[in-house]
Length: 99
Image (cartoon, rainbow, N blue to C red; front, side, top):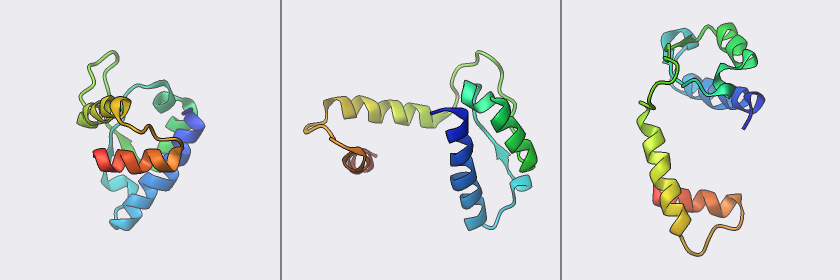
């Protein structure tokens, strides 16, 4: 994933979720870490244009976002899952099952 794809995901998923819950971008504090795609100028400018407040994230900090641990566990279980998913549709079904 690159910054352009990340911005697209934010446009679709984040703004869509806010809309579904009748929230405006200025009513939340958005959290992401210092991954290069998160700190890319393209993404930073988009976040500012949306009036999204971003939680400051210290450089070289440990990963404090619990979802990272959940994804790590799913990835570990995926490695031993048989039969292995052959395409994205199968992968999505397996991930939902493991979740």
